[in-house]
Image (spheres, rainbow, N blue to C red):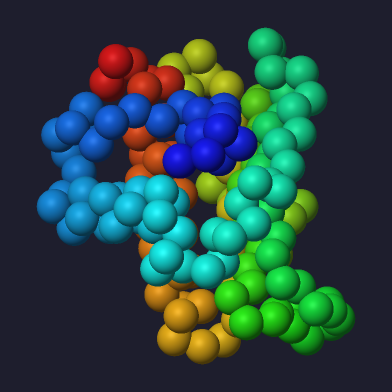
Length: 165
């Protein structure tokens, strides 16, 4: 895995190993392993060919702040109907904000937002969006990308809640 992607996943997902979470199903682990293989080799998913160009923006982070990962490959144009991609194109956004409220989630209806509560009565919000070309390869990539994002979010939340170390 390249350094930029590893840094992004580490910062955004606070990733731990698959074996650290006994509550994960075997299908979660299989999807995770498939995506990791794709990230290392990039053969299966051409969408990852330019992952080195992913940007990571951080504002604050100690008591309050935001982290955002943006990755775009092959976006030809974007209009009211949405993006048009070149072959193997995609657009991925993941943003985490702390502290956050349900109102913050509702302000961005286009992104898939989730509010996570912590024990200190504060919450953090996570938004993610994976857009791809409408073909079989794009749909397969989107499904796997969403699986790995969900997987890492569950692991991050479990770690933040002290469920796993």
